[in-house]
Figure 1 (cartoon, rainbow, N blue to C red):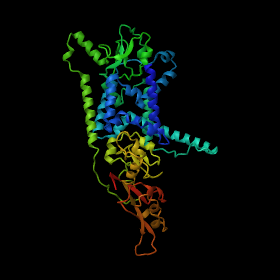
Figure 2: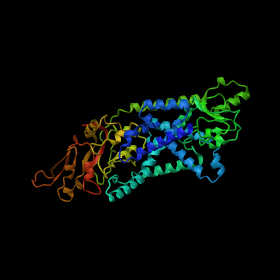
Figure 3: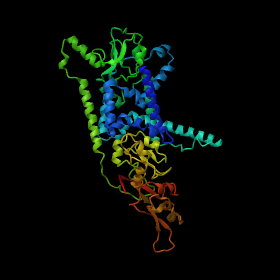
Figure 4: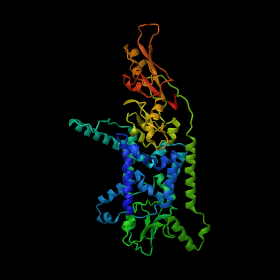
Length: 523
């Protein structure tokens, strides 16, 4: 029964989080957005104390239930491992399991080394390193860059069929690739996770994932865990072969709680009722390292009471590092900056990235964004896309080739779980009012590209379509009453929405483009 409940909850969370990235209507976020906020790393970056305390308390109580229920990448690993078991040609392994316990000292060293690197990157703002290792972000990139285009294409097929039968239950959407570098990273991550899960079950979760390592350290002190009754156990190894975390040593009747993810597969495997899930018992239920230490101390006749508790030291060090990271992130909520130095050149590249509305500043995005691409997936105007530059790799930035950032839209600020993009208000009216007056960039006119200058024909499309009324048409030659008019940008009214750049008829490079600003402000 416990396994069935766990599987049911895991499927609900996995489907819910996946739907957040595949939602075409925007309605899923109103009902399921809380699932993204329950993810561990976004909660730490957003300084969401309630979620952090909840996850830590659950882990200290019953172990790594987060990894087997809430984490979408963990649930995906379970699915791949289950499929591998079903496809195994060896009937014995298919029936009784295919895993074996091992000390795996190299894996232990790698997981703690990666955790240390991850904490250093988190504290010092090395965003690219953080988002490459973060499990929720990796899953989000896989779904957004690999699965989302397929879903959009299938939606368009349904829309075409419905239109042919005079039904409008579906509407066509643009099918496009968000970013080639992001797609490559997502494909490499998926292949790595797939191979490790197919052959090693939870090998990725217990050797690479930093969240799994942190929760594994906490679970060493969990009150409720898998217990093995040595008097009932016959040492048959059925539980060990079913454990995809490779945490059970059936010969010594021990369970490595740092690896155990509370999947409860072992409870179904045992036919002698030797395994139970309850309060931790003394001896035989701690992780293998503690058990070996106790056994060696008993043989030597020593007293372990005076030996330093290495697990407690690891726990305190990890908790201190996470607390320090949270304090640093809280202090970085207020930042300062200025305008970038602009150069009138042709062709142009943005001197400063344009941050999503509500991102506060470039520094806030660089240090808090995990690159999950939930905002990119949620953008209905196809304006947001992951950056390809090394300084802001896979961070969201605005690009106006396919649309512009409409003043009434605030989808990206509503869905970000990490605090990289903060909500613009509580009500829809408040969000629209603030969005319409929030300056995220400024328009820059390129004289040589403009139609009146280059072709000698009148245009004025940017002025007519500017939602902020920041562009007016002035005479190119003030002394000539018949002079063609060219755009003039009022920087105090421009909000950087990109409507002018998107609608400018000049190709391949617009005659007017938007440059980002270091710190967003309200006009």
